[in-house]
Length: 270
Image (tube, rainbow, N blue to C red; front, side, top):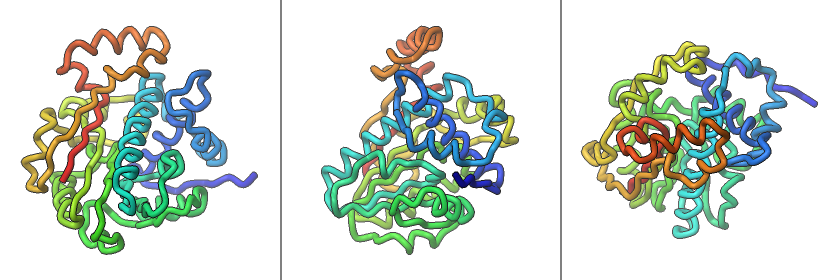
């Protein structure tokens, strides 16, 4: 069996973190996401995943946020035949295959050119690939702008410097007649604390971006309107977490302020 040897920068290397988290979840007796294709991919990549030091909390929350974002994509594509989907910072995510799209939906996976190259080699899933630095302009020309769009930005916010995420959001909302943006929203504290997480430290990355109030993106000038905030400590899947993680998660659940420091999924329409 052939094995791939990825040569990636530090930011791009985070795709291996999320890939391995999904793979570890898939190997659990009762997985949250159950992404067996990610497990197969991880087995075929020549990389020392052990250095990432993934803890159960990160594995399960990564799987849970992916599952909730998949649900958002499924609902949107079912309600908007012929729409386009953009998975920003897609890495080696298998979301398009997990979502079982209806006919007529066009899917665009967007990431750095070196990531797109790796993806084309080891995950030829039939999506349209766009190699781009998301902090720059111009790459949206590769995507048709005459249809509703479902835009997914999983794990992207903390790694975009300055106001580049806000600027990108304005460009995206201006490109399409209507659509939704779904992301996992980090608070400022959670984004700041990421750089001290053993896994992020192992990669040498300093994360920075986040916001506390889920309505804050409505002030970015992109015409966003908050549709939903899902705080994942409230999700029924928490019952599948092993102890003592399940008990600790439920302890924070009654406090919205504390729960927001963990994972949350935010949906906006434009």
